[in-house]
Length: 239
Image (cartoon, rainbow, N blue to C red):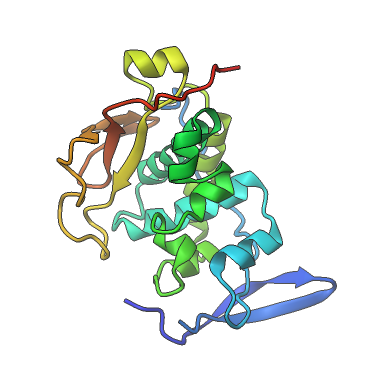
C-alpha cells in the first residue's frame, strides 16, 4: 500500500540550527543474547521535494549502528512479525553477511553493494531504503515504536560486532570466517508474492531452514534464508 500524501509527526532533526518538525511522504548467532528493550528513538530524517531516501539518509551520515538499525527496523516491521526480536537479528546478520562477503570478493561487492550503505541502498534489494512508495519507508526515516526500535538497535550492535556469526555453518564458511547466507525472503510480508521466494529452486541458492539465533529458533515462516551454492571464486585472503 502506498504511503500517499500522509504527513507524519516526527522528532526534529536539527540542521545548522534549524529544526524541521514534519515531513511529507508525498509518495516511504551470537551466543550471548543481546539486551533488548525500548531504545531512545533516533531523530527523524526529512525528505526534501524530489529527494531520494538514500540521499536524505546519506546527508545525515548516521553512524553504522544507527544505519543498520534503521534498515533492520523497517524490514523487520515489514515481515508481518514485528514483535519477534529474532526477526531483527536475522535481518541484521543477513545484511552484514553481504557487507563482509563484499569486502573480500569484488564479484559479491558488485552484486550486493560496497560497504554497509552500499548494501542497504542497493537498487532492487530493500524496499524501505529505496522506494518512497513502500509504507515501511516511514520506519526507515522516522521509527515510531521505541520497543521494536530497541530490538533492531540491539540486533544491529551484535551483527556489526560480528562475533559468533550463527550463519557460519559449512566447512567453507568456517575456514573463511564468512557466511554465504545472503538471500532472504519474508513470506508473511504484505509485499510477498507467495510463500516461497521467486528465486527458490533456481540452483544458485539453497534453502537453509530453521535458524538457531540468540534467544531461540527463527522459523522459515518468518524469514526464509538462502545460502549461495557456489562460493565466489575471487575471495581475497582474510586478515
